[in-house]
Length: 618
Image 1 (cartoon, rainbow, N blue to C red):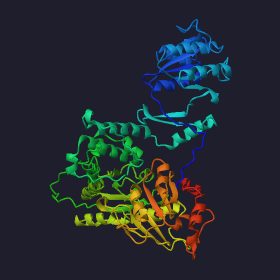
Image 2 (image 1 turned 180 degrees about the vertical axis):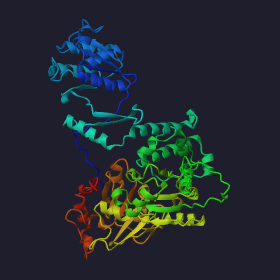
Image 3 (image 1 turned 30 degrees about the vertical axis):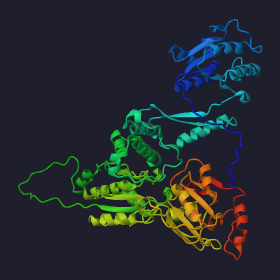
Image 4 (image 1 turned 45 degrees about the horizontal axis):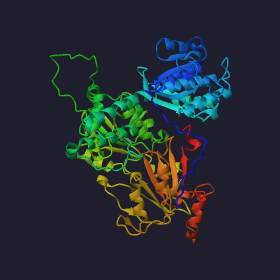
């Protein structure tokens, strides 16, 4: 029977609240109270500050905000309607608060800040306890500063991103918590995260928000389904029917919204942050309509002109001695280039040269990471493929047509692909397409993820004593059709690309005794498997399990991180810990259950996050 991760206490349920019709009550008027008030105001809530001495004892920021009518500051001794109340647990402040809460039903949260030791007259623990009891009796969550045992919730160390150009705050926020184990450390971690994110990320969030609204706005409000771009799926790559111009015309409004929201998810997942931040509304409509071709290469005429020797500022000189010669033909070229598995250090010298010195236009697949695209000089036009679910074939044709149009203008076009162009990268289709139109493309190999992905996960695709050969397959055929997979051979490693979205069908094909989609013996249920996501990138994740448990392991891991690949066979465990290269010994099958149990420490799976430390500086 499969096992699942055991919950380990000590964490928090992290939530985000917007409180446009609610009130946040803050007890205390020190600078921390001002900070909490500012956060509540940014969440669109009303803020009431209650403190001894009222406005006269408040810090400068709270006084200013009260003068601007952003919040109200009340004195414990003079709150209307609270005089004469029965004293609650012998604490007058708790009594006043109880009376105030009874007359203010909109209060959502109470925050006590005057327990700080730096306060002139810090609130005692017993008084804070009485206030917390009042709040709980009214089912209002309370936070008491520096007193974790009285808190129903805590504040994270937060940062709100701004738009790089205008400086305007955006909707993107991050929060870090150590759950009371190191508040200053949480602040440092937050700062480190912020410094490592691109400065355009706030603007990108705003543009994606606009894109989402456009995706919904194209339908009548009454017919728009309640759908999110990641509705009911943990990966944006689940297989969907291929779209064509005909079914785009006939789709219902609900179907259209669902398709567009899936495409919003694709843009959010794959496009570089800098590209998202610069999206124009015209580009947004192009992304969503599914019919408009890629934008024209606006640099074409300029570069062609310069290739002919014409430069800005040149004037025409009409001479009687000049001959009306036709301009020389300027012919562009097309390079099919492999970018490797993702880590920019794995680019070949030829690929780096093509991107940084030769390219006038780069037409990139969506899987090429931002770290590679960042190497391209700003003068180069970059276009990202719109290979969204159901639109892969149409987007492929768009890119090939765009390449021809740019080449006709005398430009050097780089068709940038992840991994190696010839390993499930459609290089052959593009070679034949370009050749039929008079262009013979040069194919520049890249480091294939078939080999690099397993290596980054600590898996050799061949290993003496565990795997004598390996075979590479795709999880999906042309037009989304299922493919025939090879049968089980103990000494062979199976590497499956583009198979994660079809994992249930693949497992059925590999495990069932009689299926037409497998050529050979079924796989044992305890065969080791590794699911490698975003191989070679800083957020790489590897899920180690067996064929019988991998589906549950993937579900337990949460959101998927495309692109992903599957490595199946006994080589998966051959280098773990002390290693196991006795798999191919005579009679080794009898020890397989014990072998797998030791490898997974008796559990159903193991999840390993990130790269080995040695790759940090490369």
